[in-house]
Image 1 (cartoon, rainbow, N blue to C red):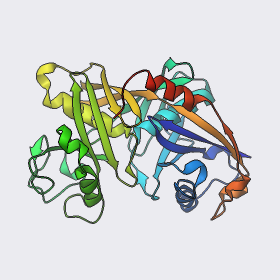
Image 2: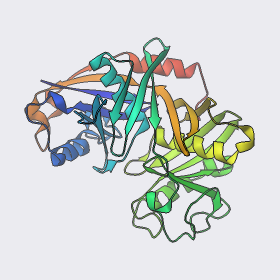
Image 3: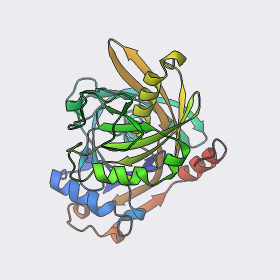
Image 4: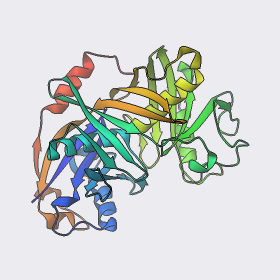
Length: 330
């Protein structure tokens, strides 16, 4: 039998699959197919999810495992901060470690277990890096800039200023007014830039952010390969970095920030060392269900979800109760 987990970080929902359980691991094509089948909101398992987190062995020194992120549409993401927290929790419990490193597509990232935020609300801290502002790293083109650092970009939206940063997956961020935040502009811009377009040929995660107070942001994201999500960990990290850079007089580096989102909130710290930036992302890592099935079922083109044994946990209820007592989520 193979056990999957359904997990979430700030209600950014995934299925987590450990390939080391298999006698015959799933091929790349089988993983993509499983992701597309299992994540569908209408016909998938447990009302679907934003993607699949695949855990496998790593041959990198001092890492406990490898994480791959497959979006709901079958594309692969460079990184996922919310997903890494849940994978970090999984590996920490599997190997009985409090600190560890996880191999991701571009780098080996630090993970550490934090004190529980509340009973049954596990908290994990993860490293978000590497960071690049170069157009080639995102990539973007035809905008008249080699970097976008709080620049007006009329080709994208009049009167708004945008910043672009890869962390390492690409993000386009604008701090906006309440009227713009509540409009349909984010949906239109996110859709436009994740179809064939002359500016971001590989697509981009698009976020609108608001400053609620000096150390508290709100971020909403149209995620590449997914659409609107309850939260995007790398987007909240990227927005924290841009905020710190544009408000340098406030000296926000190494200071704890709160970043709210439609699914809850996280905490971030922006660091600058050795001529580079990295962000610490702290948030929940919640297991909502354990799912058991035969290995052969997962090799099928159309898995029969009736053959999956599902065991719910009480962790999501604990998370929701904790969030209700913390912040009013927009």
